[in-house]
Image (tube, rainbow, N blue to C red):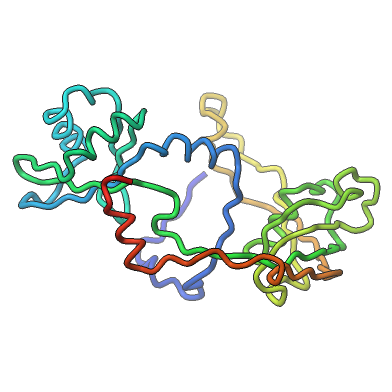
Amino acid sequence: MEMRLIDDVDVDSVVGRPTWERCIIYRSDAVDEAERALRWGLVAFVSGTRRSVSCSAVSAEIVDSFPALDGHFSVHRFWPADFLIVFDSRAFRDSLLTYNPLDGRDFSLRFGVWNRQLQATWRVFHFRVHLEVVGVPPLAWSMDTAKTILGSSAWVERLGTETASRADMGSFRITAWTDDPAALPRTKQLWLVEPLLFGDEDDDMLVPVEALIPEEVSLLEYEATVHLVRIEDTDAAAPSPPRWPVEWRWWFWWCPGR
């Protein structure tokens, strides 16, 4: 199959693209595993006369200064810092922090402790909502569909008991949390992807399935109605957590003893 590339379009100015949209990333085993791997991480900023510094140069500079660290860390490009350095133990991480900053031949490295709150702003969903959705096709009767229906408007806590067990497939019941019940959709078009067709090319058997490009993507459209059954406001029941002043956040970023 031949695919025509559009070369004369400025991809950053495509008309109709939203300028901002939030996206809820669900806590998962993969997220927990990644956080465990990053728990002894450092963010690093480069200063000095050298314009471009590679990951291998950062790694070499650290090993030259601390040979015992060789093989116990990995270096990755990162934003908003320059690099993310991940160690396999707290002891190795802290040994580098003790000599913060690290002055090399052509550049210096300043370090701060990585944690998941960096770059983040605290948000709270305090409305617990109960929803009934009519029109969900039975082959898509799952938690993943609930998350897709509500999208960025809410975090899905669970499916209704009879929905999860499929005892009642007349309506699709969801319990979720949101910061704005008015943002919950009233109707949704559910577009279910059909089995993909990859053509009849002779060499398809030699290409891994994940590398094949479909001839087209066909979908089935279903109309679904979302009924808001009940709202629980938990804001009065739990006080808001303390908010860190901006200067405290930056102190936490740079304090080498944290």
